[in-house]
Image: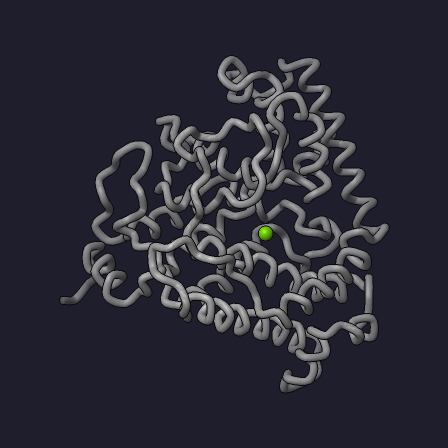
Length: 360
Ligand code: MG
């Protein structure tokens, strides 16, 4: 055999992955039936569709914490998503789970974020209070199921059911228009839990790096934190980048060993217990998160930019609801089906920070 066909890859999954892994032959199908790809498994195909989506490219101009115009070296939602994907692949491969599913979910996990981060998200949720609310995870699901209409069939990217279920983490606002086959919510596969925890590892560590780079705190401020001290002691050198990278390694290795310990006592197919870091690392990560909240996420410099962005979202939203003729034509066409407020919300939520600033 000189090349792998899809069937070979599927057979290899069955031979090599753990019984707790999601197998691409059990991905639950697509809303619209399709001919299988000769080379790629369904999860590889899902991943590739996500990478080619317009919403994915927009992540490069969406704020993670510091707005893109603050400097070229800070994380955007795109680079954050790539870091989550890389970490999730490492963990999932070590645990013999499915790396293609993990990669697809990691790359898509922030697609639904509006401009200006969580402050922008709260603004849209308030504006949509009487119309089904707004949350980035629910919006991510709406993007892949409906809004990213590349193929003109009304089923968005037409991803597999298992990938779509994996994207539905967290609370969904009452009345939010989800595809009906996602309800009632089913427990997502293990790969989705791992991505969720890697999301946290990625932002905890890269936000230390970005916060230091932005001068919002210094290395001496981090010294009381257990995770920073552990990483400094075990890192081969004491450069800032090396310590931050060691923090990520410690959290990743801990996640692998803690998950393995949980799975050792489980039966495949049974309801899985919650996957988490070890007790020690959970406490150390919570301590770091608290530090970042007070010194970074809620710092006056970050909040000022975010709140200005949220005020622009409110003004633009109200302007478009008052005069829908200002919406571009494709969004106007959605009004009869989705309602005026949802059509405006989808349009504003899809904007990059940069585009929103140009519009307001
Ligand atoms: Mg994220």
